[in-house]
Length: 319
Image (tube, rainbow, N blue to C red; front, side, top):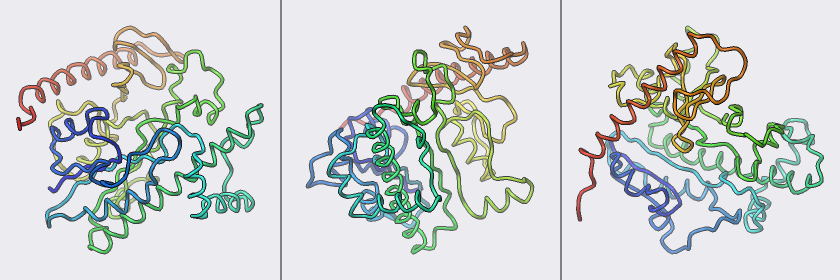
């Protein structure tokens, strides 16, 4: 496979330049590669438009005739959700704000914070509008990539995986969206971690619907489930020891492991170490608790296994 990673940031951010190379990506495109003549954006709301980065991605697709795996870490919908003056004008010029206003007037779209009436309501509603416009620009960028795949007759052969790696947590914006007042211990509220996740290929979708009534699966999941789920969809076997998560088609209860928080949780249990329960929602059976502890312990074992593998076998080459 031809492998490439795209992100309009510096490679030192979260050590992505080093880590993604260790993970096997042949081509890495960061800010200086995508925009060599431009200074990087600042955290002021004026982030680079995703649609512009998508144009840069298209320019660097299909480097070879090999099958490809492209990974794009998007930017525009990331916080903070301040209404940067430059981007606000861009959204106006692109017609996004006018489309939002028209959709609201037609009843085709309702803001998730339409009922928010606090003293800072005007500011918060403007942030929501900015966030929605940013999503519209991502949609435009995704369309550009889809058009490029169709032009190469690769669209039907491509599996799209789209997910949010975190919610709109800046300035506790996700609390407002969810109308959640429990801000003293927010990390116990599992709903605050809910993000978009989807896999799409028309052939796979049609085949799945032949034996299922819906193409939606509602269960606790995480980005760790993406790879085993994709491999299941494609009919490939894999080493479960290298998979922190389970396939979405696995009937087992999935325990979410947060690398950032170093915690383990489901929609009913929360643990800081995988053993001691620090928060419980509702009644939990002994069997459920035992399964949670077992799955958490398996994650700890796999993390050690994977760390050892990459430390001792995937060291970056010396210059």
